[in-house]
Image (tube, rainbow, N blue to C red; front, top):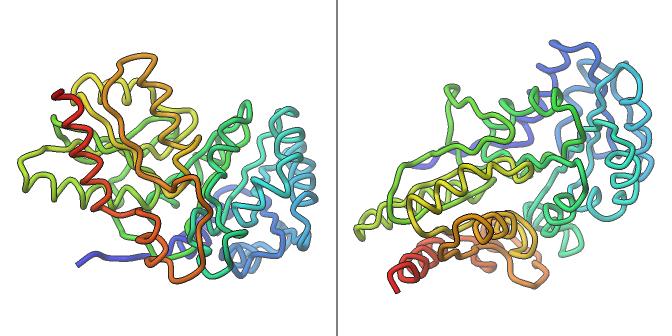
Length: 314
């Protein structure tokens, strides 16, 4: 039976642990601390917590001011708001200004499932990936959140970290030792590579088991850092397995699939299939129902893998 753990609780606990280790950390919120559990940091270190209210542009600008001093600024709001309402400030003041603000995008993907299509963050990776100097980190489970937060804080430039609202499958244990910018081979395989990020990594692992029953051995590669992308790992996967499937809780336009396709076509062209959200808005309802409706399933990954393998045999 799959064990689930809440990512946002793990985030709140990781913030508190970080606050104990580093007195230079300041956490800012656009009045979403109850949603993303940054309230845990606020209770532990009230003198280092700032609530700017429902004003996302101001959130980024105040964070830029904090980060311009001898402090680390961790700004919190919903993922779609960083990529829309506050985008000018992110682009101009964080990226162009070269200020290392850490942007924590809560309720990413379609995990804010009951608030409607306007609140789904399905284009945020594409938008953030286009900004010069921005790094993008997408943890796959609650363990990964705690592992990445200190690295995000230590990263020399601005970082956008994507967080899921819900309980997600636990994939890793404490031995998991990821590094920003370096992909992780979670499962070895020779016939096709399944490249997953965030929630979709668990579905890639499920798909690999199904494919093994059919005689296809799938490598599963976790790309937790969409930018800077681990180009060497992607090229090695293309060269050694000859076919690739990407899987992401995001539009197929401009996200992980786009980044991998851009790399492969220029270095080692192989059949490549993308599993993600088509050129559509998401909808409203239970999280698992929406994922199924959008085709973000292990079955979709299995079908894509079959097509990719067939493509390399032609």
